[in-house]
Image (tube, rainbow, N blue to C red; front, side):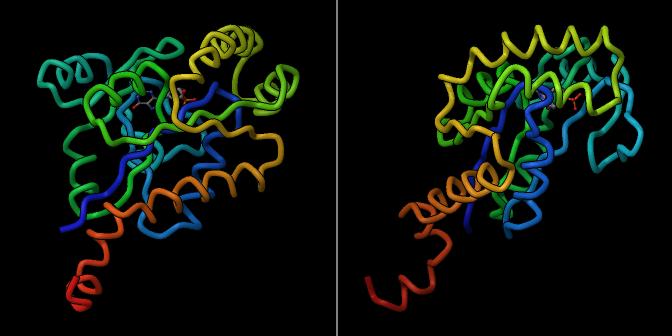
Length: 204
Ligand code: 5GP
C-alpha cells in the first residue's frame, strides 16, 4: 500500500501562498490540501469544510486536550490546528498532502514526521508584500500594520525549510512548486511503492 508524502508550505501572510497552493492542487493529481481547524471568524467567500473547519476556542482547547492535533499554533490572534485523523486518512490512501501552516506548526511537524518536505515562499520585496496585503481589502489598516510586523518576523524562519521559492512571477513560482513535487514523486522510495506491479513484473 502506498503512503502519501507530506509537504509543509509556509509564508508570511500576503505572499500569495494560498493562490499558489490552490493552483498547484488544481493542476496536480494525487495531491490535496489539508483543511485546518481555526477559531478565526470566516471571511466572505470562505466555505466551512473547504477553506477551514471553523470552531470556537472552547472546542479547539478540547481537541488540544484530546491530542487531536498533529500541530497547532496561535497565529495573528487566532488558533489554528491540523487534525491527525483527517491527515492520516489522506496519507494512508496514498495521497500527497500539503499543510499550509505557519513556521511554528512547521517546526512541530518536522519533529514528529521525519520524512516531510518543507517549502518557504518569500515575496520579492517588502513593498510588494504591503501592496498585496492592502489590495486584498479584507482587513483594516490596523490589522495590516500588525500583519506587516509579524510577516517580517515570520520570514526570518525561512532557513529552516528544505526549499525556498520566490513569488515574483506567479507562473514561475507555480512551476517551482511543481518541480519540487515532481522531484519527490520520482525518488526511488516513492516510485517503488507506486510502481510495485511494474517492478514485480520485471522480476527485480
Ligand atoms: P489566514 O487566517 O490568513 O487564513 O491564515 C493565517 C496564518 O495561519 C497563515 O500563516 C497560515 O499558514 C496559518 N495556518 C493556517 N492553518 C494552520 C494550521 O493548521 N496550523 C498552523 N500552525 N498554522 C496555520
